[in-house]
Figure 1 (tube, helix red, strand yellow):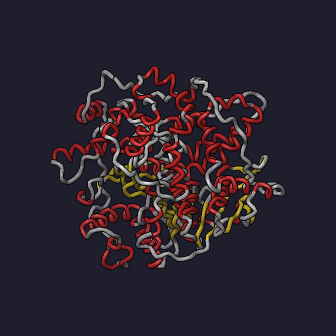
Figure 2 (figure 1 turned 135 degrees about the horizontal axis):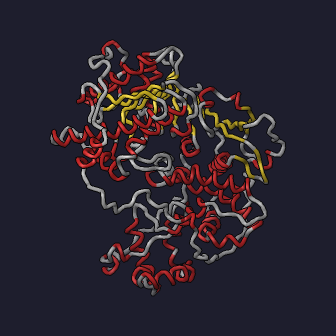
Figure 3 (figure 1 turned 90 degrees about the vertical axis):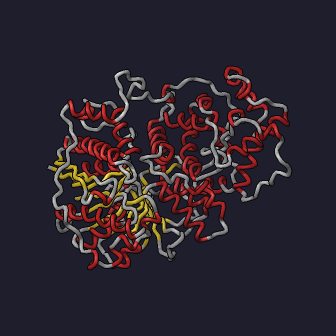
Length: 631
């Protein structure tokens, strides 16, 4: 990691253990973590199994654990305090003030530490995928991360728990994964590989299904794929296994024929999935293997006729077994692969679970008029106007010259002008927090980045405990470096998605939390009845998610459709200084209205909320503060 001096520190890996059934350790997150440790041959962590119940029987536990991994069993009360505030799995560095929590974050860390310990294991690092981004996006915003990290493990746990002798309902998440495997692959060198595949097809005398017409293509697609599996899939297989064995694929000795070079992108054959993310074996395959294996054990034992409903998943399960070291690692963890039929023909049955979720809004709403002005007029007609609460102390500022250098954002990698604006932003947030905080309060800096807010608060409020929560590892490491220089003892660092933080706190803060991250912060604070001070950002990224629907408040829902609310969000991002003044004014008004919706929604949960404009307004184009206090 550039710019960060690495030091060897003792690290503890904490894994949940609730029970064990037929070699399957619950929760499945623990099975996945143990499988990755075995696959990486990683022995650098001190592994602790944390029993969720005091009376848990662990006499048979050894049969399902890798004998290569030394483990100790502890109770939840024995966890370090910082870990007690997080969902497991979690990794903690000594001393206990830096924690990584959540499945994806912990697994990515295991891979990185395995590679750092033995840089010759480059194939381990390849698990992180192209640009090392596999499962890096937060589950709150990435449907794929959410599917792999949360919904599939939970769905299969429920399936295993409820399995009986009656024909089961296949979890919708399994069918969603089957659908994912049927989609064309997208990779960084997509065009090059598809042209090579077209050349192979032409040489084999096969016409691309794309040129046959949709009806004929649909009828023959599966038949063609099966007949030519060994020849036409060889390109995907070559690409995948050259990556696994770290061998360079031989470069083409001659230029592609002109008819291949001139072929339109729409005429090129799609690349087919070998692994769940496409052509290459990644961390996502590691996560899903233990889950899918235990699912298939039940299906094969009781309902083998159901296998026909997910032929692509069965093919993936068989293919993954030939990846180097997978079988060895699996056997050490009590996973003994099933022998499944070589070829399965899909029933083409339409599953209602698999159909697209209908949109909440009619996309062809005849009453919809585009642009922000009609939407703003509609709100005004219903008594909702752009209104800011007065700033409590617009001229207040920290005495930055008297503060230690490491407290100032100037210590970060930013220009002097940007550092000044960051100081002005901090003046606004810090004033509000300082006037709310009491000795002994716990303050959480969500989406903390490099710790600009949290470090100032920890320095200014030594009697309060400050926790920084951030998903980006490098930002959090830099924040810890600044904290160490200051000798702060009242600060914790947690690399995790917000959902994995379960601790109690009194005040939540977020400076420029992007899109729905602001809504997640407010929701987290409401759940714990904590005050919140947030400065939203990236309004254009706001959209309906699995957790939120917009508008949020009853008052706005009665007035605006989702589409109209999205118009406000898109124009709220048009506040950049280089835009014309009138455009910026409309952008500022849209920002206010979006934040008023958030404020009204919090008021419906028993909060007193103000939307305040930061001073000076030039400190940021995104200069709104939403301040909420439980009544």
